[in-house]
Image (cartoon, rainbow, N blue to C red; front, side, top):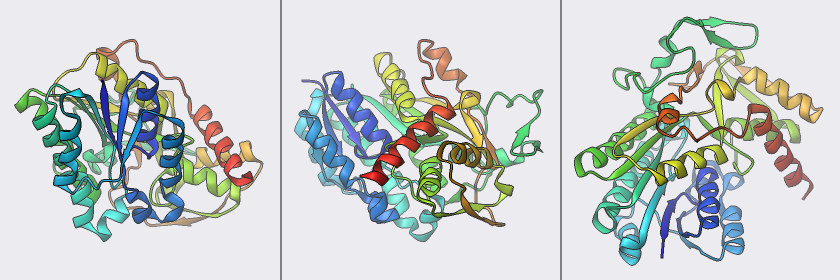
Length: 354
């Protein structure tokens, strides 16, 4: 039997991973205790998504375990042992702002929880491939030191600059303001690398840009495109935090990211690090996303501009994904920024009408 462990299995990337692996014949053990509802409220709960996975996938085995609990986490790995071929670790506390409210919880989930999953893998299925969803926030606010140019609707960087195509893995993660969230993810990121380099395990860190898609339970503190489209469709008020609304994000659809995971699984390496986002293929500023959303829906967004930006937030971030593409040349994007927003819009419309 081929077992895959997916943490955060009812979340955006976790659920996409679960469905893709189930379709490939894996029995998927999903670790998800709906901490997202604790972080962001009932509207962001993954309970409904978990129920849908349970009802539709006969070989999905949900486990409502808190990854901060070592004994309960290890028990799952003991149960399935060497049948575990793949571990995809997506469970996390994902918000800058929330992390500052409860640093102990944030570090417990992001850092200690990651160590628990790594060590359980090493002890019970050391040959398994281990994939971790890290974040571009490990670079802290260093990207804000780039020589950015203000355009009408976005910040940009000169075409002659080495990072114009995107920021690659050579950017330092040191001497920068990360936010509490960014710091806890740095700890996890480095530990995943170390288990690959020190113990020889097949580990990969994917430093994501904005990960998105129609399954995203967007909230104000996390889930940029999903929450924005929800506000446009439902005519809710929205707040823009700083940078004149011209801050740029690259956005990658969950499907495209999971395709990258599967490519790594088929030909794994040890202790790898990949920047992974929408790159120049799929990116937008906040103002550009608002314009696209308004054109799709026919609604005007009721927004308020807040002068203060979020601590450690990026003004401009586009991922250079060429390292991954060089290692896995058959991987490609399937979704553009317009495709992504169209899917999210359709999901919001269905939710509103149901």
